[in-house]
Length: 476
Image (cartoon, rainbow, N blue to C red; front, top):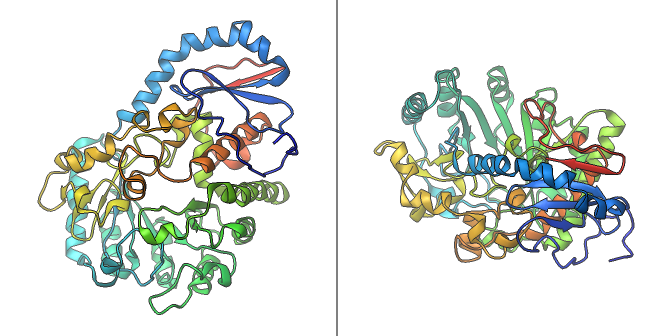
C-alpha cells in the first residue's frame, strides 16, 4: 500500500479504515496523498481536512474542537431533520408494468414486463388528480411536486402520459425516465416544449458494449436508436443519461464519459446495478475491481471540463460529494439513512398500488395501499412503508460503526432485503462508497469539488466552521 503513487486509482484492500468505531476519527483519504488527512465525526457528518504535519497541533490547540463542540448540537439537529422530518415531494409513477426490452438486471419481474397491466388515459388523469389533491392539502400553496413517469417503459403508454402532462402541467414538475427506443421527433417536441425532464438509459459508448445488457425480447440491441435520440436532444438542458454499471461494461466507463461529453449531455448517472433480483447478481462486479474504472471515469470528466469548459455532472457521485460539503443540498435520496423511499418520494404502480419506491414493485409485502381506494397518509404510515422508513444505519452491522455512514446510508433496502436477507443488513458496494468518499475528500483538499457539482449547488448554503490558515483546512 505504501507504494501507491499520487493520483493512482488503484484500490487494494485497505482494511476498511472507515469502519473504525464511534466518535471523531482520523481517516486517511489516500495512502499516497501528500498533504491532508481527514477528521470525521460519523454522527454529525462533520469533517475537517488537516495538513498531516499539523495534525498534532490541530488535535491539541483547541481552536477546531472548541468551535466544533459549540456547533455539534446544531449539526445533530440538521441531520435529524434531514433524516426524519421530511414529507414526500415526488412520485415515481409507473403507468405500465410492461416493457419492450428484457434487460437481465431489471427489478420488475419478467412476467409483469411481458404481460402486465397498463393504465388507461382516464385512469391516469384520475390518479394525477388524486395526487394533486393530496399535495394541495399537505403542502404550502404554490408547491409544485415532481411526478416522474417511470418504468418498466412509460412510453408504451405515451398517449395517456402526454394527456396527463398536458392536463396538469401547471401543477407538477414532470419527468420521464425511458429506454429511449420510442422517443421519436414528435415525442421529443412535446416533452421539450413543456420543459419535461427526460432521462435516457444507455449502458455503453458503443453498440458492442451497450447491447450486451439492453436488448429487446427478440435479442436486438438498442444502442443506435438511443444514440440517435441523444443527437436530437443536443441543446436541451433538462435531460440526462443513466448508465447501469455491470461487470460487462465497467471497464469502458472512462470512454462512456468521453462519449456523453461529446454528445453534450449535461448530466449522467453511472449507477452500479441494484442487486434486488437474482438476474442482476450474476452481473455484479466486485467493489475493488469496479472502483478503478469508476474513479478513472470521474478523473476523465474533470479533464474534459478543463479542456472544454463544459461540465458533465456525474449525478450519483455528485450526490456523495455534496453530502459531505453540504448535506442538506442533496438531490438524490438513495444515499442517506433512512433512504428516500416513503419519505421524500413514493411509487404508484400501473394498478394504483402504493409502494415506498419503484424498486419494491413486485414484492406484495411492501404494498402500503391503493391510490384509488386508500388515503395516501394512511399508506405512508402503513407497516409496509414503515419497514423501509424505519430502516436506520445505526441498526445495521457493520454500518453502525462506519465513519461514512451518513455519506452512504447503507443502500438499498430492497437490495439488502432480497440479496442479504433482511432490512438490518447492508446493501451492496460498501467498498465502492468508501472509495468515492476518499476521492471526494481529495477533491475538496485540492479545491476541485466545484468542477464535479451542478451550477448553483451552493445557493443558500453557508460554511458552519472555517479555520483558514496555510497549514489547515476545515469544513462542513
